[in-house]
Amino acid sequence: MTVTSATSVSAAIRRSGGRGMALGAGLVVLALLPLAAGASPYLLGLLISALILSGLALSWALLGNLGGMVSFGHAAFFGVGSYASALLAAKLGVPVLLAIPLGGVIATLSSLAMLPALRLSGPYFALAILAYAQIFRILATELDWLTGGAAGLQRYPGLPTLFGINLADRAGSYVLVLACVALFALVYVVLRKSHIGTALRAISDSEDATRVVGVNATLLKSWMLFLSAFIAGVFGALNAHIIGFLEPDYAFSGIWSVMPIIAAVFGGYRSVLGPIFGAVVIYLFDQVIAKSLIPVGHQILLGILLAVMVLLAPNGLSGLVARIFSKTAEKHHAGA
Amino acid sequence: MLELDAVTVRFGGLTALANISFRIKAGEIVGLVGPNGAGKTTLFNSISGLVKARGRIAFDGKDVTGLPLHKRARAGIGRTFQIPQPMQHLSVRENLAVAQVFGAGRHDEARIDEILAVMELSHKAEADAATALALQELKRLEIAKALATEPKLLLLDEVLAGLESNAKKSFMVKLKELHKLFGLTIVIVEHDIETISGLCTRAVVLNFGQLIADGTPTEVFNNPAVVESYTGTAHA
Image 1 (cartoon, each protein chain N blue to C red):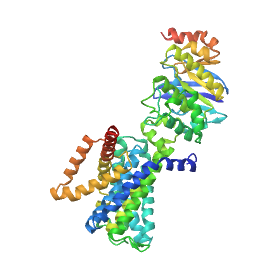
Image 2 (image 1 turned 135 degrees about the vertical axis):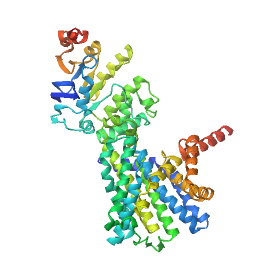
Image 3 (image 1 turned 90 degrees about the vertical axis):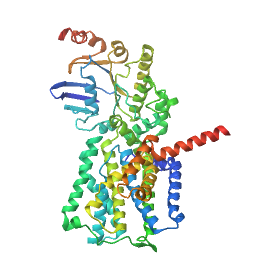
Image 4 (image 1 turned 60 degrees about the vertical axis):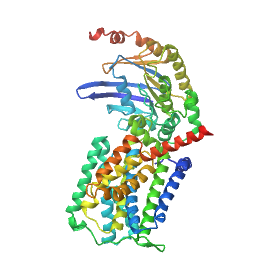
């Protein structure tokens, strides 16, 4: 956009310094987790899946927080990114590390079909995007000459070795996915602090009030949809190359639409760190605790956990942590 | 500066504006007058691009009839709303910054400080726009936001409504000051005859979506058709 000069972007980066440091510290803690656990392959596998969900939750929260849109169809972008990257690598021989961002680009292109729905708001947008996700699942099943149909795709390249690091092993995959989460979180922080981010926050409250001062609300909302689709597509692509198989019912599963919502709301979707840590906590709780307690139907515990969080701390985990820190600081201040 | 030719707005079967034509020269302060439901706000909405109108609207010599709202704001048409619409969850300063960056295409903190000072909002610059301002301050913020877009034409929709007499008088002085300071052309929707007479060099009167008078405030308020429109005898 012409009105956003390099100066204003650099100013945004300066202003975002405090939050950036908090974000960096949080991610360092996350990065240290596998080391503390002795890098067990099982735990690393869990953390990789949790981080994939973190990236997806971040993309969902970005669309909701900055674009003002509630999506029930992120599975579409995730699935399109998965298939696009796998097919580019398998059929055209595109290097995997290039195919992954291209998967994000193709997910972004697929979101163009959602542009007419931007005129809708609230539940109407949510329903439109839900239907949209179903269309892509059906396409992936029916276009069997390209996607392998319901049988899915199995023979496509995995992650390569880069600078001597084998990205295909658990530790390498973990570092790659973590780096992607950190990168997109940084993009989110800078964007949120920029004038574009400020305008976007205002749009979700009163669109006319922003349009009347020159804000092209439709264009900015479109950009958020594209960026959100791109991020979801990249994490779909990463996941595809890590797990090594794809089928429509998995790649476009409703789980990829529902879990990011649960993770973002649990973690606190208004913050940047909330969806990331929310996803890690939710996923680990579900896989380690809930599954061991109730092997079949363990998701019920997830629902209870979310309900308790929403009732006790409507701003999620990040809001709860901020409240605890604030109270501790107040006590400390009073005692001094 | 502003030319309206046969501007017509229909909402279903209701004609809100019918063939409105008039011109406004640069530097004028024009009062837009008429009873409730006359079409004053609809005319503002047509000029600013909030509703689609038939006919032709030209601004600064260019046809803007087909331009969307945000492009008209960038072209220099600023407006306020009858019920103030601050950008909620943003500070007063952020409200102005967004308006300046997107409306004027630049970011100049010194200019924002100047507007805040002129609109007597400096002390509330960092306050939350939606929760920390009284009605009069919200109305000043409405104007400040519009000024931040660096408009040539300012459309003020009942900015004096709801203010008590002294506040109204000081607001009128402020509007005259803004007119000079920023070299503005102003169109103001107002019911109060005294205000129009004290502030405007010209008044345009609408009734039932039609233009019924256009002239100096004295001419207009002595026009029998205008008197009838206010007393209701013509449609009784």
